[in-house]
Image (cartoon, rainbow, N blue to C red; front, side, top):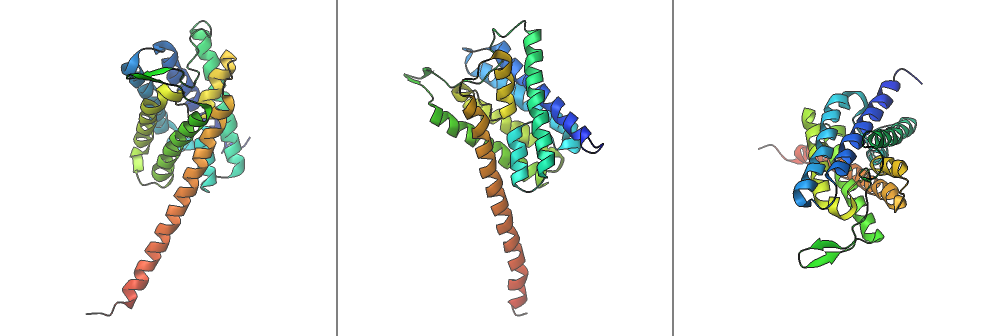
Length: 247
């Protein structure tokens, strides 16, 4: 392993480990049935963790901590394939390690370790809601789309400067406030796989592993298309100015 890539992979491992230990840990400690305040606490646990470690390691690895973010950055042409594979392996290993450590400190898997799950008979006012796998797939894909769009438009494009981690962390928080009760709002294969491995519960694993990747690729394609359109528009402006007769 080269000295250049090793710090990046270590940063991705630590950041993902922290996300699972703190984010999934908050889900395990707070548990179900605590209503909106509990959901907001879980959302901020995830969002603040990503924000803090993106500030800490953004200059080292970019602060992805999510295979779908890495796939989106790769699809947008902002990193190489070999490097992306290394990132994803480090993130998945970090996620599993974080969940196993969480299981150790909580004395087992009785809490569920924050494993994401589709809602069944969720009370919404006077009615109840059950999320089908198809609906869950769409929710997870859209949430990943939002996150990767913000990452590409701030951290990768450099439009937000040093505030990119804040925008990314808040996007994570808002996504979980909306989708947490519906799907668990993982939108991160490492966030889903870690607790699944630790608990042995692989229900709907295909959904949680593939939907965020689909959302990330769509976000990358849209980002690339908008960037090209903006470049064409900027190139056309001088041409129009040159054709305008001087007054």
